Image 1 (tube, one colour):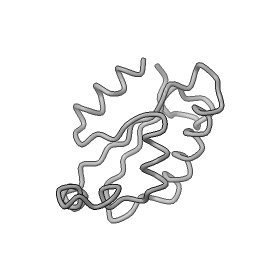
Image 2 (cartoon, rainbow, N blue to C red):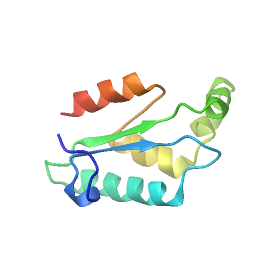
Image 3 (cartoon, rainbow, N blue to C red):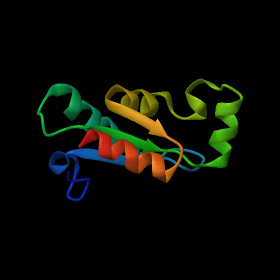
Image 4 (spheres, one colour):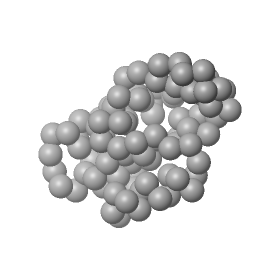
Length: 99
């Protein structure tokens, strides 16, 4: 399986690292683009995995903040064609499931 190397059009799956006080603008844009590619067809587009290991976001999840304190568009786009994970090992396993 090919991961993001030359852009979303040439990837079979996308992984997005989402740690930090907010999701990077470019990352959010690529998440939206890839979610639409998966939704609109093409068997080569298998899905997406968002990786969230940031302790600040973990605390928000524990407090049951909607979307885990992340941008709801980003969360929805990822969950429409993949899933959020909270460890690198889970990300690797999720990507293997997509292949």
